[in-house]
Image 1 (spheres, rainbow, N blue to C red):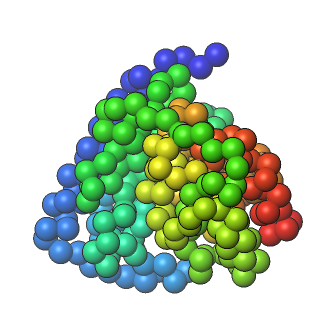
Image 2: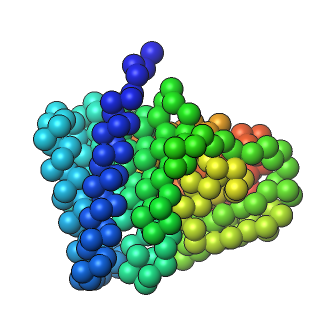
Length: 261
């Protein structure tokens, strides 16, 4: 049985407060932009925020590991690990689009148990933890009923991320829904928890891209799995499917199955 996670959740929100204040401050002052070796962008704000979050975690929980996007992992094999994406959606941040945010997760034995998703530009924050209801801006949210793919609103990630077969699989799934949107990133994942979107497939992700989503979505009644239907852990695959109504799992995975092999 998992003990009460209130203290961990409170600390995760404290980290999110720090992240938001730094992003707003750094944005007002301007920032440097670089392209990393893998071709993805990174700003001076990404690095400053992650460094500050790591410092605060080390001061409070020196025995915990940290996995983050911008720096080397620290004790990633520890029983308890924090997973950080200081700015998820750096391309959006750099181009002035508001769908970027900080993703902060706490995991034990590879399972994400606490997640905070904070979006400074929209002033939205989702938080979730095992044993706690998921909230958006301190109001409880839940997924909506949707039993038929033909009635579903589907949000797909960046179609240029991942391979061509994965992009085709996402497109095929999107075409089966009632409506589809693309490129919403983690903000779209959060809206699955709020019942605005029914399912969201994506690929080419790392643990820091989805760990915070797992407890947020599950605390709202949804489900976070990979394209084989397995629960998402810190060592899961790069292909993810965020579901509102769990009854969409089998038909959605059937359409994604070929790309998952």
